[in-house]
Image (tube, rainbow, N blue to C red; front, side, top):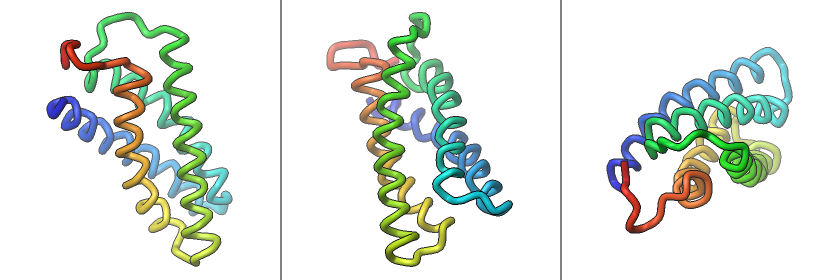
Length: 130
């Protein structure tokens, strides 16, 4: 599990850089931070699914629609949490939109690992860790 967490974080760094760039560019050009967040998540779900399947959890089985739906479903819940945190930080507390997303990412990243490990790629005790 430790190696998976390391690989997850390496994939996550690339995914976060990619999706944060999407978010930052959209906010920079005047898109509302919630709409930018939706675009950020759309790109992130597809990239994260592909990379975590291959690199982090090393799932050799073919990707199935059910697997992707579990990823999308867990991502929707994480998106809701992320949006709530942005609302609290940016809209209620006046934190800068960029900093607010950095803070939210710290919480969401930990929950994302757990969701993907347990729900999406179904890695349980006793299974090979890849």
